[in-house]
Image (cartoon, rainbow over all chains, first blue to last red; front, top):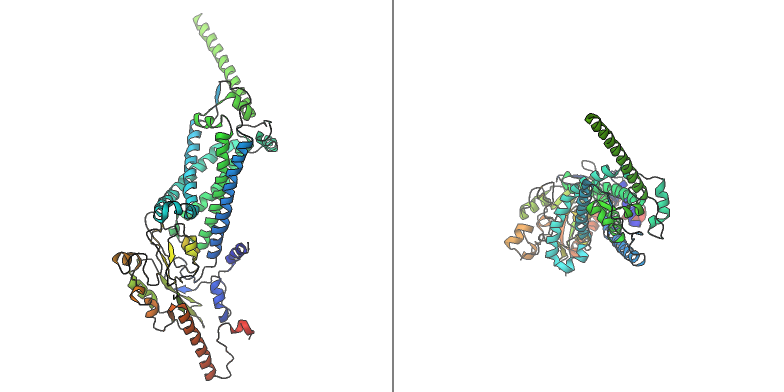
Length: 323
Length: 204
């Protein structure tokens, strides 16, 4: 914690005049700049003050806390699965299916999801590879893997951002919070207990995941784009702060994604089918997204009505001409 | 075993930049990479201070702690070296290093970093001593020939010292004492105490 405060105070020291010759070494230690005939990135600074703080934050706080958070998330999900089990359909399937995700929505989902998994694996291996993969692959093997992983990570990052922005645009309207979400949260979305709280097209859990994805995803994208271009001669402090924000938000996204993948696959009966085929059973829709189902049914009824009206009128017209 | 260190006497450094030129020439360092540099604090003002800085071959090197591929190692002489075959050019050592020692040539599109290059204390790399491969990647291996780093060897004012840390720090402390004594001889009334840390200790 002390070191973290030091890191923040280090931001303050940049341009102090030298008052006393005897203080010169102290000021150099605090990161004072001078003149250097050698041109280069911050070549006029003898000692950068924030390096050791960044090292501590990366190696201890981020790597340490991150590992615990990931382990606890996996354990919590496994424990939840063992205790609560799969959320099953309470009534038998009706056999009738309605469209939940359009073709483009599904493509966008799996495009972004596969890039996310690729980025998560390559990113985590840069953080934990030294302690986990080197004993397994050896120094040479891991270096070759990390070399490719770094390139994949740097190049697919911007492609992920494209998917993220498109997701934000097409699902923004569906993910605005409203009153039903409050009761949904109060009843833990039906995960605990046997209640089935009401939900529209997106339930409150999906909305929370959407907004986490948007906020942390935008942070990851901005900082990632900055880290992608080290040739722009950014200050080391900017890169260190970018790296910290990038890893923290990436961990939030990975933890969120683990929960999302659990709920979307083995956690809920019939959910994955919806994202793969685009269609869900009417029983599933009624159980998990009753408000959306009602809306859908009303629309179909109206559509049928107007169509049958049209049919009737055309029939009349037809019969009229016949006469 | 000796623990090799650099020491720069800021009272003597005249910012001639010859250490940089010698280093570049000896190791045929690529364009844009600077293994050593001289920084002048308060340039052009009274009491300006110049210091030559490169990799300081830390005992507990931050670069070695942060490296994702673990490419750093410390030799028996306490010199911090790295394996360019393992380096992936992530730049983390540059963010962690207090002295800005790690340097990167640009390699590929979008500012992608190439293999890191830094001061080797004229001790080459993991390749066979004085082999062509070693010279290509890391420059000359003077230590294997029984010579000290060239920057310090050719320093005209002997401001930059290189060698066993115990020996060069003793050398430096002798210099400081001598400086103080000679000043007192010239002007016995002098209250201008030059000994480092004097003011901190005695609030003079």
